[in-house]
Length: 189
Image (cartoon, rainbow, N blue to C red; front, side):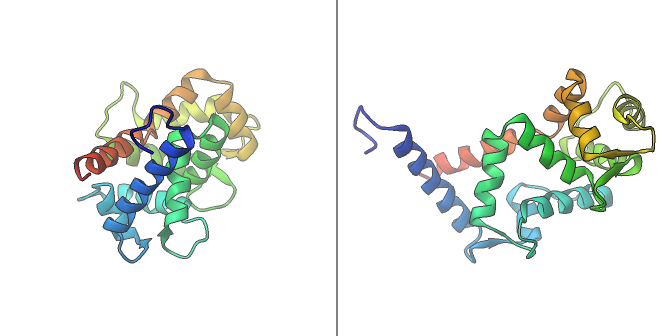
């Protein structure tokens, strides 16, 4: 398979899937990833309370069946979203991530909390404060002015504002984490 000049995309994907499975089972011999292991897996240590809450929310969005664990299929779905997901899929996930209280709406406090947490975890600084950024988002896309972003307002507003779309996509870009895992996998083969 690996040395033949006619190696197909399917064969390469199967090989990569096998490597992801090996990595997952090496890190999680029980076959599931707990919240604690999730943080270790991605090297997230010494987080503030707000950042910890954000990581827990992220974990919960990947835990699709809500059983408190991420199994291999949920892990693959998360990787697929990060690596290959389209704008619509990623925005849907971002909405779930920002809707901390699962009310179906994002309020300004939820948005602010997530922005601060993302910046703390990524170690990023910005010309605009988290508070001013949250205010700007609401001014631009809270169409009915009720102080909450519905799913439709969020999806339409972000897609119609290139700057917001770019900012969200870059701030929640997890490909550097996936690249780190891939490097570790190559080193171990």
